[in-house]
Image 1 (spheres, rainbow, N blue to C red):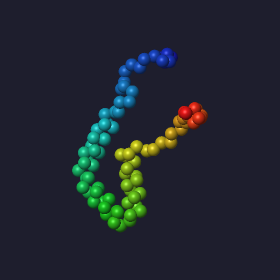
Image 2 (image 1 turned 60 degrees about the vertical axis):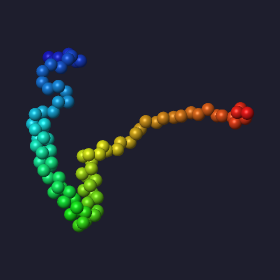
Image 3 (image 1 turned 90 degrees about the horizontal axis):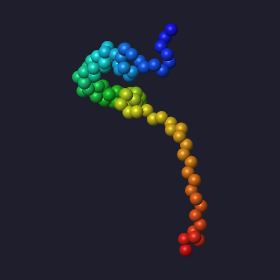
Length: 90
């Protein structure tokens, strides 16, 4: 039989902690990309000259990693304003 529901977690990684391999892979990727920024800019410019439509598509795909995606706000706020009689202001 397992632990009782709601009991405190013991052992292992804390919730939300990435594993060591993932952290190292991300660091390696970032170091690799940092050395390629000049070439990436040149490649973007080349695509822009050859095919502007493809360039815009490329920018849109690239941007999703740096700009948060918009989400639809489903909150509904209702305001009720009292009726004001202008004759009351005299």
